[in-house]
Image (tube, rainbow, N blue to C red):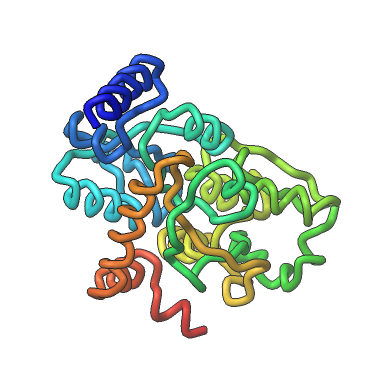
Length: 266
């Protein structure tokens, strides 16, 4: 038995020295006293960095606080962008990412994603000027050479536009949070976005409309993104979401930020 224990101990030392035995994310987070959360900060009402306050706002910001509080640590936000989100995740730039990240097969192949939240609330739709709202009734009405469609690069908005709007004039704009204002000011005609973002901007900006919000072009849910390989950490994040769903807090957050009951009922 002593020989077996000695071999086991020696093997553990070799694994540690070779870098093959590493602490999991939960242990790392506890040791640091912070959880690193990647976010784009450009998506109202999910994760938006308010320039007036310097604070992140939205349902993803609230979920981030709840996760951090459950772990007894503080949040260290790590800014990321849609074009670099996957690379930053794979490089370990953050522990998790929250910023209206669509759950899809492409991401699931290379990264881990939590259980869904926001089900039935998310889908692709358009934001346009209120004066143009009656022009756009179908996807075919959008897909014309004289229609200028503005998108943010690197995410599912761009993917949807390039796959379905092959005849439009496509304009790539780096700052997603600025695109609605660009539309209102006539710099482009259409923004491809999520239903919840479209609804939020119509409330904020009287020059805008979301005429197809009740008939989204697609349906999907969001998830919390992280590296593959740490099932314990993924289980913990899913446990937090399950507890929030069970005690009703998730529904309350979805109602507050996403208009859950109003929009889902349509």
